[in-house]
Length: 298
Image: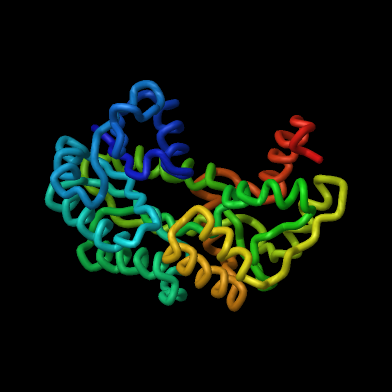
């Protein structure tokens, strides 16, 4: 019984590794381009490669029973994902947990949404034994808003005014681990399952600004729906194609929102055994952390 985790150094993958390592009762491998220098929890074996390195992936999957498949937002995401699913099938992997996006089928004009929707179609058509985690906008994305919030008194993410059911990454990782262990421990492949990874509240940009105002004890305004500054921010540290991809995502959020259904929220609550974390609780944790550092809080 061995689990392979891809995307192991990212926001979600690192949380999945940490929670698997805490259990300590199943061998875990972590895929990384830099196995010699990667720092993983005790008991996690680093294996070299990435999803587009076909030979490395075949070696990494050898002896693996269960796969956590997180495909990063890269230009070759769809190719990387489909090749990895093929390799998993041909290795006889008995369980897959795939990180997808909530309502991706309604946003095919957004490149990374469309890539994940296509992967879901492959999973369905080949009847791969997979739990699909359809994730909403990450609360942890707002870590990038730290300086704007603390120094500028502005919430800069142009989420719009339709509402987004923001999800905490820790809930994603917790459910991923539950499903990895369930599939890993099953003697045979089990049927597919789909979860909407969403938060309990549908929040607009102004709603989130008000949350920060309440918690910081001073006015925080919403920067508005102009997506231009957001796109320029992304371009400052990422390729232009990625900034354009994420611009289309924000356009979709502003047009239609990304709102959980009562049934999807209940399904998630039942599996976690508790309601998903609220954005306000996430923000309150950050405020306690940030305001403990006076030089950054003013």
